[in-house]
Image (cartoon, rainbow over all chains, first blue to last red; front, side):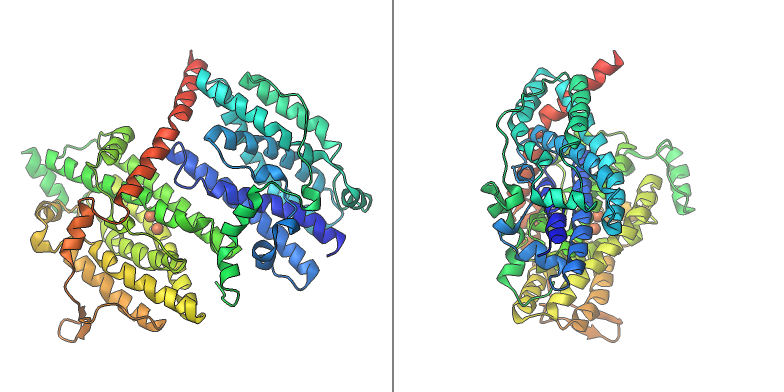
Length: 248
Length: 304
Ligand SMILES: [Fe+2]
Ligand SMILES: [Fe+2]
């Protein structure tokens, strides 16, 4: 696998696994409108994953997008661990989405400048979707934070629990550095300042307390994950794995 | 007097609108029918939702997710149409939860393989279209307009379902078995979707007079069977009815006796998934209570 292929897989896997998680909400939302909204976001992310995997597949020339999605093992997935965490209650899902939406927005804004034209075009397309997702998630953060005492307590706890998964957004490993140098990739470190600012803006409106940066989860860039990924994959990949000769 | 004017309008094929006078029986019939239709869209999300996380390709996952989302949209649209008759969504929801309102019994059967996604799209959406095409001409304006909009999407669903079936029926040995098995399990429940025979359907008379329904249960069922048999043959699947036979005289298929004991059993709560479907819906509603409360409290703060 070439460097750029691996680099794109990181984004593709993050969108794919997050989409998979969100799709679990189907028919379980707090209202019909929210059910539709969460499916919508899941569908957008799946579209993004599909576009990225098609590109990796084209670069690779041998492995199809479906094979990337359905035939790799845990250690070959490079998504951020934040996507793997369980949906929990609606507030947990909203916080996870909010933190990652801001990251996506900033990341795609930078990726748009990539000298790789396909990546740049995919970033532009995704950016539109992500702005809508962010509006949705931040509105809910504010409503739940400034709603009832119960909702405030709940979502503050979600925020405190999920915070440790955000460190991975801003890491720079050798591959990131190389892609940055080649003007293909993004400088993740510099995203942190704006990310902090955007997070704070909404948290203030929501009357929520920003957690301290403490211990941060790490490892996804090397294919290290939470134990939850294995279960996600065994569900997601079951049919193509059980019937390797079948076309669907 | 009012009643005569009302009937005159109906007979002249004019639509009844929410503010128009209408007999109580017309209103209650519509509320029952539209809410049942809306609940069916919503409960129907569950058997298909059951396979979203296991869809076998990226494309299949996108199509299924979008389809189930469409169904949620149909539900939303129909609830709004129902609300024009003077009943709230909360009330409709609680009727469902108390078991007072029904939904289509087809969704009380489990989805056991990926082929069931094909069977549901092909047969269940297919049956829904036959019914809904005729309802496009229903006499109540908001319901009729809703049907026009919904029908377009349902025909997409039907084609997508048939595509899954066709691909599986022409796939590996296992896939073919799954496809035939899905057809075996969903065929009879699908033709039961049209409801009891006209002779056993006490409300048909008024519904036809008021032009809420434009075709009877038996007419619709026959339409569906006639157009579906050829589709099954085309992909090499066998309809599980030994009595199915082309009737030259009627230019229609004769078919075997429907198991009405099973039909009424499932309608009255004794189907394989009745309890599960309703409990799932109630649980989602209860789990979301704090969220809805928070949204309301927040909105009130903004207005004060
Ligand atoms: Fe529908
Ligand atoms: Fe449908």
